[in-house]
Image 1 (cartoon, rainbow, N blue to C red):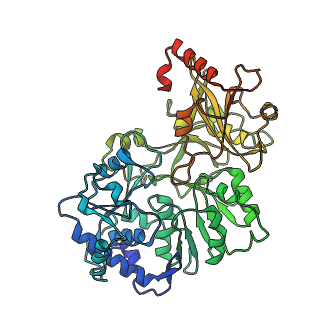
Image 2 (tube, rainbow, N blue to C red):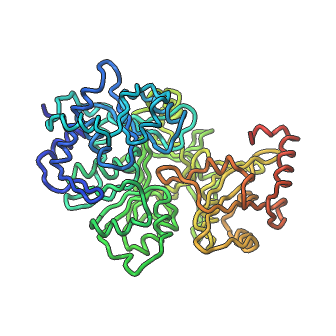
Image 3 (tube, rainbow, N blue to C red):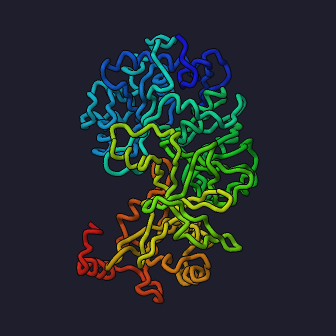
Length: 546
């Protein structure tokens, strides 16, 4: 039985007689022929474990190890569904993810002991440690020719949890057809792709593993991202492509420079959600092309930079997508952004809106068992990304934060990202997160958490002079509170995670504030915290900090 074109199963079967290198991991190499054989074995194992009449869902909670790829590829051949379980989630939240996605089987490692007895809905005997004899015996006794399965482009293949989801879990549905289409990155069979981003996230799958299958390229799999070994790995394996996300570039740049930084075969790096200064510094130090762009887990919107894309821009829509920047209240398109002679944004309050796709050709395939979240994404027949952007006169789009990153100070609404970009210009600053904390009377106040460059210190008087000199800093945008952190918090996929910062507010160490608009910076002491709490209580706003 042959799989229809446009499926991951078909891409895999096309590699079944390919003896070129497919996978390298910790000193061992597999050819594509061997990878497909391993996938065939897992397909038989999964087929035997998954009960008929129930969702054919397999949870995988592993680091980036070959078994993850073998099980995932086996599921593609068996027409089963892989649920990527984020290992950084714990307890009740993780159990809720597993219950929500109707997993029948879980493949994990020594962390099996954590899952046994949890309210996951999966029987203990169906939670397998892939390093133990029980799982290995099942695999070893399975045939190396895959079972026949009814696989179509519309066959559900992956459930990927969105980063930082709140409320009911949001697991994005991804069919074999959608994933199989993620192959247009121009790789050749002699390319070597470095995969250190977690396999439970879409960035690693449709920027690396699936395009590698399609091209017959080689994947160097890294158990987890490590900035200290990054360049050694790239050199050792003659890596030509790396996919990252979030703060990964910043972590690599924090390693000591050497005279050999440009001695490598790396052609380009895909680095969405990276800070613009990090992109520039990475290009300069390592001498390779860095592509930022934009793509959501939901798959509805893709933006790519071109050769004329300005610094800091995400790029333009891929293909003929009908993309707009919309005011969520009026549903009208926002005016184009205006800039001064130095590129500073002049009309942020009117130009920033939500990134929306309006044409019916959206490829968003929905959330698993979450109709409310699905309806929220598809309001008015449009796909609402949840991301704030602005657009210049030539159609280039710029990121301005999440919809949850709006602040309202003295009646003025503005987004966090433009403020972060301004503060990021200050020489000692390595990274910054801007977020709202409650004003004791009404609206918000601006707080900034700052990570400093190695060996740097923040002179608050010099910092204030810097802010006063910035022509594009809105009159309401200057931070009222500043917190110094050793490292900005990040999710398991290296994206900036503001939740713990927002929860801590000004009740943390190394926090300073300006009691008045023209006041000098002062440390936030226990007495200051008590005063802020008392003022919030006096204005019936204590619920904002509980």
